[in-house]
Amino acid sequence: MPIREGDRVYILLEDGRDYLVRVEQGKSLGTHLGNIDLGELPGREFGEYILTTGGKRAFLLQPGVVENIFHMRRKTQIVYPKDLGYILLMLDVKEKDRVIDVGLGSGAMCGALARLVGEEGKVYAYERREEFIVVAKRNLEEWGLLDRVVIRLQDIEEGFEEHEVDALFLDVPEPWKYLRQCWEALRGGGRIAIVSPTASQVMEVLRGLRSLPFVGISVWESLFREYKTNPLTFRPLDRMVAHTTYMIFARKVFP
Image 1 (cartoon, helix red, strand yellow):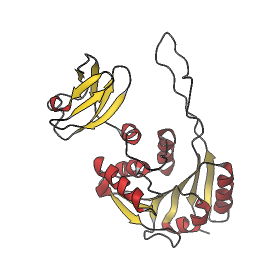
Image 2: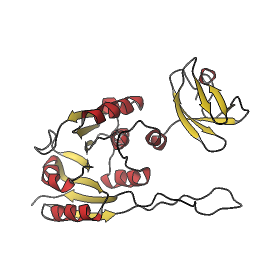
Image 3: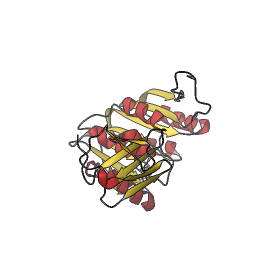
Image 4: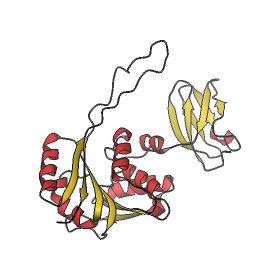
């Protein structure tokens, strides 16, 4: 697939350093291994490499969800990909679904949800802070997903404008205060995922879920470890991102 003017390209250098750029004539990317003239990229194929001015290889790849998240503009903490993938599976998000995302932040989870609901689905994103919405909109537009998202600058204390949604993701400081509103927005059997970084928050959420008609309640933590890829020194990396958040899941039923 040929690269075109205006495309976003994930550039992976031979030493593992990476960049995400938009192809523009007259622009160059400066790296520690030399410069790359972005005007030379149109017409080349994804998967090819070009040489930097320092004679080092730079591989030209298409960006995916993980690359978008790690290179996105952000003002907030993100849901790490190691957690995000499991949350999407547990929410069972698929094409044509209607999903609520509470705590839009910089748009990482919203973008992942929008990618899965497809052109006929919709994500309704709620955020209280306008400065976060500005950043999230730019990210979603950059990823080509903004048309699948309805963004509401709105507090959810009074509830949601949508009802009978298939799934709901809740990422706010005190999620137990809004569980009733979430229950009312979900369809029967609909799924909810809540993230909380501390054990005390999780206990409050569990108390709240058990006081409402929710079943299938579970709590998970994802510990993920990367390994060195040199076959002569294959072993875990010296550092790892350990605890990031607790993930709480449940499904709505009727009393």
